[in-house]
Image (cartoon, rainbow, N blue to C red):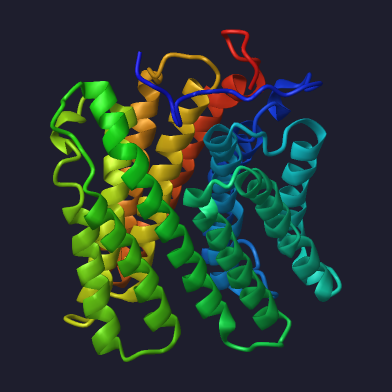
Length: 401
């Protein structure tokens, strides 16, 4: 049996009778899976003129906002609420408070979806409420236990709140033109989270599962890669000349990939729960390298870089981590059903099509949007069908969590 995420060490919680609310990953992974399966088809209907685009944020930024602050943030919430309780041996939120937190996320999705029909400030107020609540739930055990190593995650959640605020202020006419900056700030913040967490867990998981003793992390390169992303975010959002931003992005991509030299990727191809995580990390490097390539050829656009980081890295890592955590933290063997390998392949192929398909021209662009979107939604639909019972049932070993 492989070790589960975060050295599965459940923290006892009193009075939680409904399994769905007994640990943070349960409701949020289920919500993320459902949203991943439902939102992309809705977006495809908007793109094909079947549904009217959202006017509050604008069609494109509505899509970006909901993929970042809807889908991705739900996964982040589930991961952090679970991980922090293990890192600190202090609970984050369970039971009714966890239910309220999940409801805040859900109300945000409804408010943004119906924003054209609601009084203008209301969608912003409702949607912006979730991140501060999540940050407090995460910060309390971290600060109370003086868990200084993980203070950075509170900072990343704060950056996500500022990014969300910028997009809403643009929609309200207070900061015109800031939706793009908000979307990119959120993308950089989530990319930084992925760089930090893959460094912690991917080589560890790979070594534990394969028993290859030469697998190890390279801490200096891990720190350099994270610093590269931070500096890239600063210079890009500050409007520094693209002739500086693009090479820096490429260098950061090289660092992200170089740090995996001893991660044992070649040993993972027969284990879906491992190779999907390595694939997700590779998409981070690819996205940053593509950002650098935008300076070299018009065939590579910012959209290609963005979707490598989002559809590729976020899509692959969220699906892989949700599949792994949901097994390990419910007391099950880390042996996913065979159909999950198909889901992992679908989300990977979806990203590749979405990144490289448009480079073949306008017709290919339309087909790549449709095919990539369908494959992405299918991958997360499979996750929901396979894991709904796992996420809503008590642990099989009778332990709390």
